[in-house]
Image (spheres, rainbow, N blue to C red):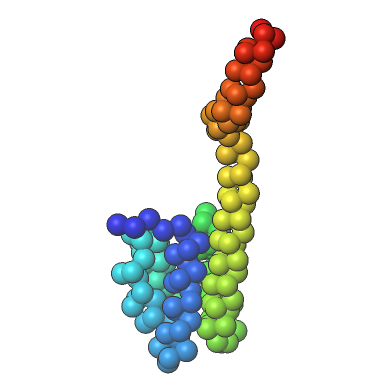
Length: 152
């Protein structure tokens, strides 16, 4: 099983959900279609949320409770967008696409940070292993010349 970062998984999930909604499916139906493609932990969290939503007559209370108790920031953002659109009766596809692009931007920023840290981390092996061997190769002829000339 391939391991996905939560941001990567939600980026893909929210964009695909937006496309399904644009094609005329309800967000609940689309979420159930996409649930099997998610990681088991995320599947469970969303399934529990949807079950609570169906069992209750007070959607607002369920949304607020789930958003408040959610520790994962990405899932909290998703549920907040979902609640705002359900409450206002507006389309979900654009906000979900925006969430997907925001998450992709954050992923790119995280990768850029890792890339910049990598050059710093490579300095230690460079100084410990590569620089001494290069200096040995470069300075050996000089030492041999100085030894021949009687300097040592």
